[in-house]
Length: 136
Image (cartoon, rainbow, N blue to C red):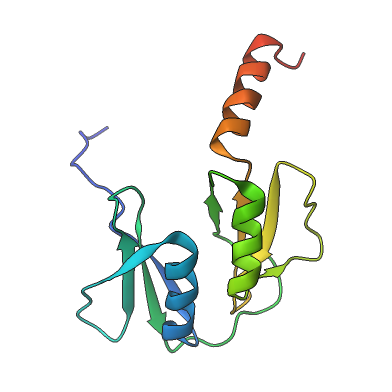
């Protein structure tokens, strides 16, 4: 096996119909800023430096029916506040989502599913309980 060569994820590219609309949605939801892009695509990224850039590439056909092969899992400080904000920004609750479970499945304005997970604090409590009494 060869040695690692220092590869990292530079950005996650989202093919979309309306790059401006989708970038605006994700920028507002994640509190990201617009980054320099050298193509027709719109690149956004975290001002904090924590997280990966997203690149919205225009020209795709509308999303076909079915589950995404790749989706984002977002870990909020406050899950319900994050879900409420996503809905206010134009997300829709996915019909098969279980909002009382440990995550909520939503779809962005072009129908791409994403999950808002339990908060950092709730996740830390879950991990603590799991480690104290792992399933048998």
